[in-house]
Length: 231
Image (cartoon, rainbow, N blue to C red; front, side, top):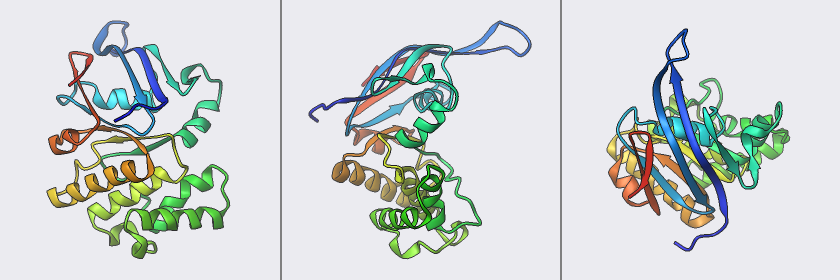
């Protein structure tokens, strides 16, 4: 694909985990990783279990801090932000999809999708209107009033994708989004993610063990021995 503007980049990321009660390094998971993501890309990150894929994703999304290195969203050095600036910026700039959908069981699909928009200050009516549009976009327009227990695993994960998109984030970070689904539901979810990328230019960074998903990506990176290499 033709590259557009840089949307996210990290420079010399290190992440060390220390032994309890000491300053000894128990695990040096990320060892100087640098990466640049461009608007509209679909990027997959692969690697063995425990290689640091999720750790990298959490740092890129501002959910965890590196031991060393920097992360930029556009021109903003996110770990140099003060106080509540990072959480506020994260709510606007980044959408998250995890292996387990984390939907609130007492709320309907519509309410689950709308919640991040309302937290960000959008009115109830505007948030619900936007949620309805997104549920239609992920082919769940007829399931808006159903609670998670009334939805299949694949449908629950589609709701989670819609929720990740509600604040129109610059990038969506997904950690094994189809890892808890059967093969048919996983294939449908993958098709949806690529459709959103293709039709709406949504940027995705996906951590996955699924080879069929990664092979469809614009770029694939592998984490091994603390380093990142493009395949």
